[in-house]
Each structure stands twice: as structure tokens, then as C-alpha cells.
Length: 259
Image (cartoon, rainbow, N blue to C red; front, side):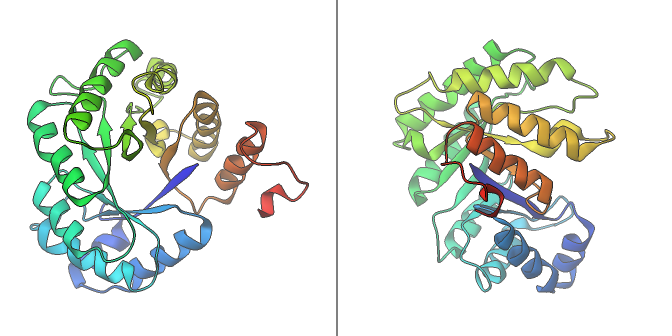
């Protein structure tokens, strides 16, 4: 299970303040803490308040790479910001978050990922928004797959995000996303990977941690490969480990939580 630590994001107050003041301390602390908690990637997002994300992204990349070797997931809707971040990376293979299925996005983001040998997250949506059912999500995912293949991006570097919506406003979507995850495995051989932004499922809900953990286990059973999530939630990480045992992905031992 690929876990993308979500915490280095300008949407969070402490990270936004650190970016404004060009103070690396809080950001580097989150990089170390998430890495030690088990993050496979660290999401790096300048946030919406930054005037020039292309100037800030290389700084974020640099200060994070000073303290950890964990691969980075560069998170921006701006191609210049992503490319500036890609040019600043000196360590592991990165992941880009993200493109939609709109043609003008595919023609910019997919070649960028192929050029730099990066992975790419593709969102199953277009200018009309997020589809309601699995069939429409899969149709958009197929458009992303075709574009990636044409650009020479390996399917194993492509991550399809079926887009989880908050359960309190889109309860019917939760099941459709699980079905999309299952069907995505049939789109190519080898199949693209699947990813969700897990915390979206519980936005503005009580018992957020419970909802997140439960849905993660359900999605893993459907074939989910990766999640952008709060890796600092110990019980969440325990759910990941227990699910991997129950899905026969790792050999059981009485100390599976310590693995």
C-alpha cells in the first residue's frame, strides 16, 4: 500500500505561515514525522494563498530533501509550479498530482510526467465535474490511459483517482468509487494503479477518523493501490497493516502491528 503523507500543504495554517515567513522548521518537522510514521511519498502543495507557486515549490522541495530521502508527490494545478519542482528534485522518482481527463490538461500534464520520468495521478473528471456513477468515471479514466500510453508513460506510473466525495453530500458516490477501483484494473495490461484522497470522504463529518479508516479498508479490498492520507493517525496505520494481512499481501505474525 502506497501512502502519501498529506500534511505539507499550504491549506494547513502552520505550513502556510512557514511558507510566508520562509521558515523551514515546521515543514521539515512534518517531513521527518510523516516519514517515520511510514509515508511512502510526501505530498508537497504550496496552497492557494501563494502568489507565485513556481517560485515556492523549489524551495519546499529543497528544504524537505535536506532532511529526508522520501519520494515527493508534487501537488499543483499549475504546470510551471510542477516543472519548477521537478527541476529541483535531486533524490527519488517523484509523483505529480494531478491531471484531469480534459484534453487541454492531458496535453500538458502527461508529456510533463513522461519527460521527467515521473508518476502521474489522473482524476476521473472533466469540465462537467465529477461523474455520479462508476461507468462514467471509467470512461474518463480510459481517456487518461489512452493519453498516457500515447505519450509513452508506463501504466505502472499512472495512478487513476476516481475522486471520493464527502459522504454527507455524496453518499451514493462512495460505492461507485469502489466499483471504479475494481474496473480500473481491467483498462490495460499491466493495469494503471489507483489512488484516492482519503480525507475527502469525511469532510465536515463527525467521527472523521472512523470513516476514513473504514473506507480505506473497503477500498483496499477493492484493489486500491495508494492513498493521500493522514499517516500520523496511528489507528489508521494499524488499519492498513491489518488489511494487508487479511488480504494476504503480507505473511501473518502475532507482531504484525510492529512490522
